[in-house]
Image 1 (cartoon, rainbow, N blue to C red):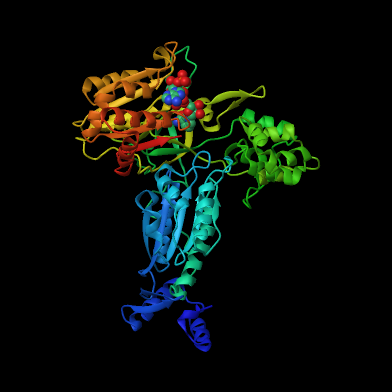
Image 2 (image 1 turned 60 degrees about the vertical axis):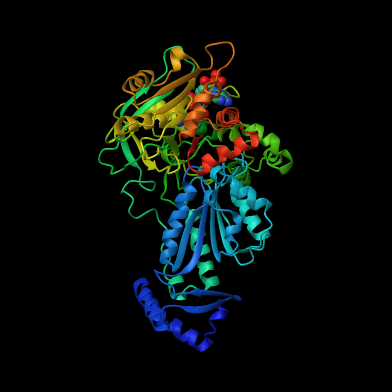
Length: 605
Ligand code: NAP
């Protein structure tokens, strides 16, 4: 029970345990303080051969703990931050660091290490963690003094689910680190997995480093979301009333982009320009009906989700379950009951590529249609295959200073056809089809500290936001309209056609007039035979762009991650190379430095 290095004789250990048995958490804390006082302010403790100096730990312990995170949309950072707060109460003295701000070599002396990393896109490291990840994978370092645990975050609908967490976990062990508890692979609905992981990891680290047994074994205080957070939040979304919902595209457009205005009145929720709004959609009735008809369920069957109370299947399908997102994880769970041989073969490692092309554009219902169950498949079996309906994050399109008590979004409705069936994005078409004036949507604010205007209004800002990527820049321009725009604002916007798709055209022209928007460059891709994109405009304006950068401008990109963001990144490097008279490598280094200085920020999806 007591670590060996404490050298406390067995009979004294029993006596201590007997004395502590049944004491409340507060009483245990007090006893630990008493012990600290009796021992003097600090005492050397031998810890597995490496001498460390630590005070008897308690709420103000000094056992070092390093918590690092690699975040894309803020979830890893949020969990890392919560872990720091909870670890303090467990007798540690934690420091929190972003992978963007450290090199792997700085961690070799860490005794205790908690690692959080999300996985982005097709198994990639979050942008801010990419350099750290690459350096660690190629490093020849000795982590034999480090006790570590890794919490990966990801989305089971992607093939390389939690890949970065898996890689980091393996690499720290390969380099001699001691894994004190198993890695967590968190899906979008991460609360439970994270809490279980944290409880195990912190208990193991406590034991390894001899943090006061009393405190470490005190009843687990779960690292719940920030206690100072408003009443409404992730675990208790606010029902926001729809003030307005307007189609931004003109008649004849092939796009369907909506401007949604929600009231936050009475919620206590607040946000800053650059933050995102999480919205929890309902599933559409026609989608539910199709699944019920294919499975033969009535929808009235009473079922429970993850040990929750029994509810009618249709009710759960409507607003609690992800009934469309098809992933390998769902297919595997389904086939554990369905026993369809053809599906079993498709799920094998050899058929990875075939499975990928089957999944592309398809939904869970396609499993039932193409690979029917061989035996009985009950409504409860169906529910057991599913995950919680995840919220969708939308970049906020308004400044709270310009629209007190309101939050605005810019949303592209996703509708497409595969296998002769019309499919629709769950949240975007919920917004388009269901959120009429006066209805309500479940929302909470998702902070994005990595996408912020400079506080100083003298600093110039360059914003690149084609399509819905304009959203946060409408917020930025509104913000500068309220606070001042001495430094200058420059927007690059693009969409398909000038006549139909010039989102917020009148507002932007108004801001140009009032000088809250200094410059506007547009690229309408389909108004001429050869496509023109925002990156073409960046290159055309290269000389002035370079001058703005040299004046200290911040550079922002929002919108499509798959191609646009990479193309704009390359255009930025090209501009720096040409007009800054630099080699390709020097230009890359210049752009990397912009990132490090937080002058190059992206919000891409
Ligand atoms: P978009 O239609 O993807 O693009 C807007 C403009 O960018 C178009 O003129 C497009 O041209 C152009 N473009 C295409 N490829 C480009 C590239 N490599 N570099 C630069 N520009 C490029 O913009 P959107 O309206 O934001 O896109 C909607 C899509 O975003 C939806 O289908 C959805 O999947 C996704 N999405 C939206 C949200 C949201 O609404 N907030 C959230 C998540 C995902 P062409 O089309 O003419 O090539």
